[in-house]
Length: 284
Image (cartoon, rainbow, N blue to C red; front, side, top):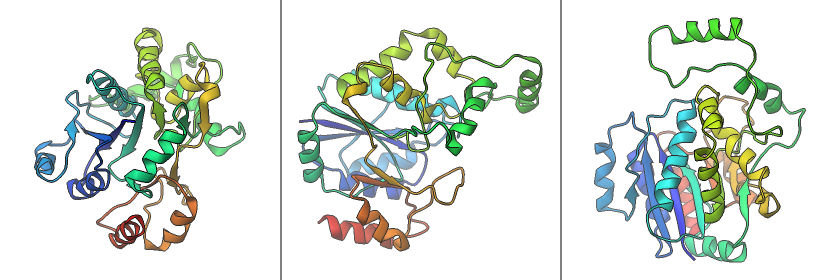
């Protein structure tokens, strides 16, 4: 059993190091994608204290842009091309933290060798789905870099017809769909699907928050559907109804522990380190 953990990082080398150290295990390979907008020099020193590999094909990520999904899938492709055979690819952020020891994770993966884990909102009446159509029916120039892009975006959405999502008629997604754990054959299917559908790939360049629904849509419209559980194994608190999930603190410890998930997010050592200290105690 070998697991590739892909960690998508935008900031906080100290916190990332702590995460890397908690995931050290002979059966785990750790890969770190550092946002292309961030100086990688801040993270190079981590190599002295943890065993991991940097993703070489870095992408500059813009919040809400398709660049976030691109960074993830390019990294997955690099992992699959590494020459190592993995049973699972697990995608987390630098602000995630494990709620299980590596040994317990391995036991879980061994017991679920053919299963994929990703969350999606299956209620068409949810708040997420009420706004979902605007993500692809309108043009979003989030990843473009020129003065006046939002004015041009507004003009485009005024005069041009609504966009129609290509290839898929049934979409799957939600606020927890960005982070997932899938088998290597499923991971390969995801990246190959986009490479083999250039029209879909071009369409996604101007879609908002593709990381929240494209991967789930590809999986659930494939033969992997019957091997997929609607659960991404992560405790994430969206109760504040902000664009980003709640930053977890020691006040959330009971809910985190009761969740019995594999990971939780998000944490920030500049806000509260004590919650991570107690989680460490629980793990070891």
